Length: 453
Image 1 (cartoon, rainbow, N blue to C red):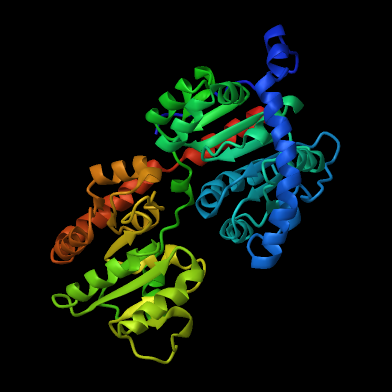
Image 2: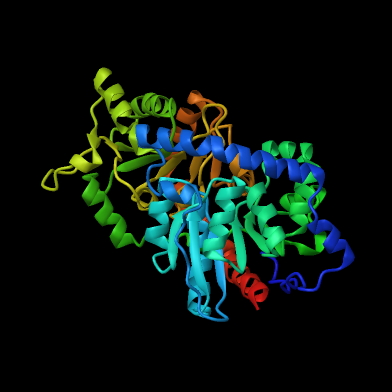
């Protein structure tokens, strides 16, 4: 990681003629706002009825329409609104906000999320936040209402999922936005390049843009971000990683009823179709490694029933994590993880890990750092656009392997398990790699404090 850079100054309160001109929306922006109003009137009844009928998005339904918690600030008190899309983004935001709360307890912190998993994670990892709620839909009336109720002094995005309606409204209110853990996927880049009239003015309104990599910095500058406001700061998810100590690893094996000296493969964050591939590979691996257990953790818990039915239909013996008998003796078997929040620690008992949403197109990938933080080499499929930087770094270190298909997945795991001395070396290398990457959260916090002064 490069040494901390001097935080750029926040936008000045006195506007130049160019700034005043930029504050006047173009005709296209006006059309965008008009369409946003129209969309709001259509979305509100449809979204509401669908939510009530299906149960999806029912939690915090009013938040989606801008009825977020109304914040009461003390005179002169600053407030930062941090948006963390889902579980991964919450993990990245947590270490930053913990440092901010410890260093500047007078700054109010509110956190918004988009998914139920993110909402639960925010309550678990950021319990000190003054408010946690679902982000309003990006329609002008909803955003306007939310900003009236919160009145932030700074709006912080994690990752780089831009919300045009929100950013236009922030610009008109002269509330600076910033972003950290920034990255731009090829798909997003292609879309942004189609609407430069929208993207460039919004990027110019950011107080600071903290990207994860040089590639990200180059890309976002080409899209219109002012170079002097773009920084490479790394990924705060490294700061969020917690290494599980050896005594706790033994207790986890005991809770899962897996032998202490047995081999373990953890397949985490799997998506539809990937469980079948993993099971077929596992059954073949058992012919050589009779003491190999498999823990499968689907990304979405609502798929547990579907996976369990597949196991039953094919006479595959397994046990649900929630149904494990504490009095049972340890054995070699398949455990289907149907509990929330355990996967990160369960990786610590693995000899090898696979991370899903990567074997079947379109994929995209999930967090490879959680197993690596526990000293576990990780496999992933060929579809990993969302995690390219991390995957590339881990591959260079020999800590990640691309399994192009089911046969490669099987042969790669067989080779690794057959070479235990190499696994020991990889564990030490993984721990050193994670330690070297820590520190971004401290630098991000300095930027936030500088902007709020």
